[in-house]
View 1: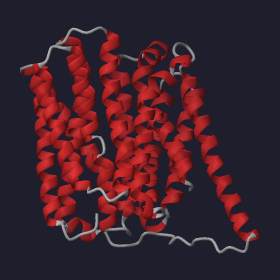
View 2 (view 1 turned 60 degrees about the vertical axis):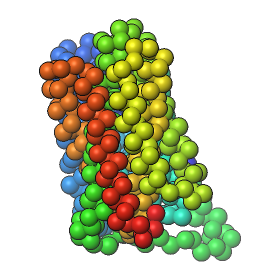
View 3 (view 1 turned 90 degrees about the horizontal axis):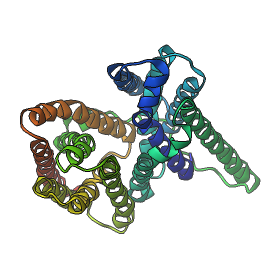
View 4 (view 1 turned 30 degrees about the vertical axis):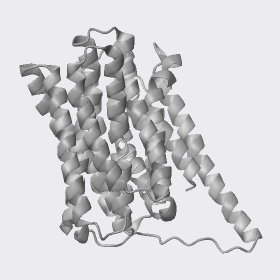
Length: 390
């Protein structure tokens, strides 16, 4: 699958992944669901993803990641179009189960393709893929504006149609390239059908295990920032809705810029561990400073810097671990997503209890502590892998 179609697909995949929040009030009004019922759509999304994780353990031994990614997009498109033509709420829950199933295959497969089929350019392509996701997340609120109100279902329908066009475009490009190679008597590049290397060496590798702990703490910190920073800006800094929304936007803008810059830097020989360690430490310090300022401009700058400094952590994980185990990119992608899911499941509940007992400033302090722990772990990983390629 050509990288252009992967990047375009991942941009709209990000919108599909983040579309529920901006549309939830319209969904509640149209279906009569309560806030807790609409929130349970997220649970169905996660159930679909977890089911997909289990199945992918079998798929990655028998099917190439290009095929896995196409299956993922196909299932995702079906779920999105089902919402567009549905009535009531029952099919909505089923569709979100389907979307979750397709989302995991799309996410893991896209990362694995760039880490394996485009191995030599992975340092550029993987951060660029995650940059596309960040931009999609930033622009989700704008994408759904024409569909706010009674036509909210067609926000999902439009996404399904766009992703279908991208998927078909990928097939046509592959057909055109193969046909051109035949006309020019050029032998196509043969890519092994399956990545069949055993995964046990990865599970026994202390560096790989610790690196996954880095992702757990980073993802936990990230979801706390995404969840609690807007609340902090609104309730502690007493800002209006527009500024509250901006606080989340600047976080993703910082993340997007980090991922955009990191690709060319690593492609030119930059040390990913140096950037990761420094970034995690600096991001932690920005969160430490945030509760001590009442100036909204400075607060927004700190939020943006937090996103920027730590934003490339996940792409760098995939780049580095793929250089250690180039035949296990499918399992690496699965491990990354699983670790991030664990972090996003465990820490928000813990931090919300602290915030309830004390205040949101304490919640942000815990988030910064998690980044410091991630930095220490990354330093340990760097030390024990200094002889390995990066």
